[in-house]
Length: 321
Ligand code: BDR
Ligand code: CA
Image 1 (tube, rainbow, N blue to C red):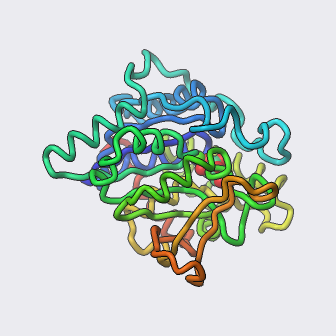
Image 2 (spheres, protein in one colour):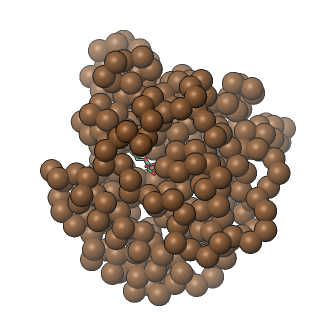
């Protein structure tokens, strides 16, 4: 099985991504690292452990990471001042996790994991579905880390779609300096999954019924979480198709399980860190105007049918893989 570390800010769609990674036979979920994003980092850690406990994977270690961005004291604009971005609640409505999380920090774990792989010549896959603070910190302290990673999948950015401001997507906006550093760090394969792709793989209430019908804790919980997202999405995105929602972070894990789920193009991607109106915006050079070498495979389309197939496959079995 492919060894995967998930760095996330759980979060309703992060929760679905964790369940998919924790229950897929093709993936070995080595650890989950947490970062402040949708909610404060201690809440992210607790939510992450609740999700793992629910699916019988409390054996997966959880390492708590950054409580604030790489260089800023807070998000570019305090989250409380933004409208239409309260889809994630605080604590997920699941039984509290028992026992404490790991002592080591997310960054220390990422560096230790990278050193171990470099020592034996193996590599692991990193899936980052929150602000990129932990990853940027780890790469800053230990630049060779990039060589220990075969693919880094990043949920973030948007070319024609934005969500947190008129210009930007949440994960890149929440820590633009970290995102810019990760994009230029020299990863050999960086798969960027922006909103343009995740908004193509919208799930519906019918999809939720099919997930619930699996009858497993993951099937039932994911149905509930996606339904919650549909209500939030209907409220916040008046122009979008009603009765559906994107499940951004799950798309990133599903893409590892089905190579045909995403359509990608190679492009150079940078992140605006200064713009008065555009801070956190991904600048995706789809038409090769900058002359800069591509640093990412950028997903431009995603299949909802293939996403559902992976979720149903993983959530239908009672036993963790
Ligand atoms: C991203 O922002 C978060 O709220 C979601 O969990 C997802 O990772 C989408 O912009
Ligand atoms: Ca997330």
